[in-house]
Length: 444
Image: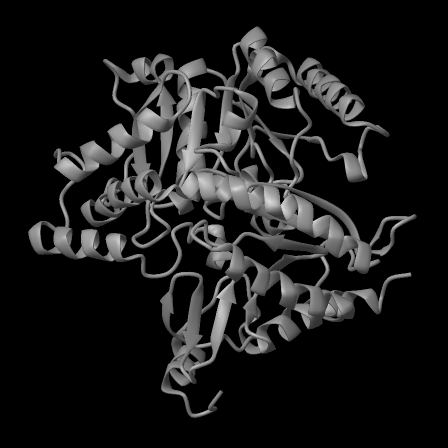
């Protein structure tokens, strides 16, 4: 890639990048995208096995999405959220129709962090309580409230944060906090732990329990059968609001419209963003149960955003849901997810660095280890710099071979666009198979 690239030059001179030491990064300048691929300004093509940030569920430049945004832009670009507009109303109806149970009212935000933050506000106001239980292995966003909910180290620089957040351990059999050896044990002990936390915190002081039904960035952790139903039962017992953060896992990513559908569980609030319209125009929101929505029937909800339910974003959401229906997107995710569940274990047979494989739909994680017996991570928790070099080298090698990967510490996240074909997926897995040899150099 040319050092004289004006895109790169202006980026380095004027763009301040998130989660980065500014002098230590060199972002690839992207020129265009199509389907499962994108191209840099030198014409190099990359297969997007990460859907950018696990948001591009319909892939790059889906024609239906582009046309919907263009049509809406020609008619009405922006309108106050205090007014009603057809595309916002239709988007809300279409989302509510696909949500489980009695979740049929939608509060629109600009993204997932704002959705989680507003969900907690709703839960507190609905219950009159202030505490919120949030998992250690979690990421809920980077606004002041959502970063306080986040359990992983990106929270630390923002502390002290939102008061009333209490941590708990969610299920993770591969590295069980409860010394479990089976899925059933992990489920039972994780739920017992949650009850114990509530006992010592005072369940009557807890407004909400927030969780990612399938934990995203922090490992693609799929809960054991019965866990989400157990959390639902605990919330019902103590009058606690169950909040499902489906920002990553929702809208087909896990092979169902929402990840909770795998376990037939209905939360009180579902937070969404990313896949609702593939981020073509920023959009998120909270799907609200009728019971909680009724709390604000005659008292104002004290929250709002200038761009809530933005017409361009909602037009994209309507087009996205129509494309999902007509093109079998959720079904493709489920079918290729079954394929991944067969192929990735075969890959593990060839690579001693793969310690565990987890996932549903087109949302899988490969946990990399130095030793399968000891399960020592390939790179340490919260690794950076030289400590993270083995995984960083692997991701760089993939990029050099035309594969864009999402890695987080010692986990490789396989989350391509839900429109990907079997042939394209095989192409990506082939490159991944090659670069895992780099991880194997550090594995016993």
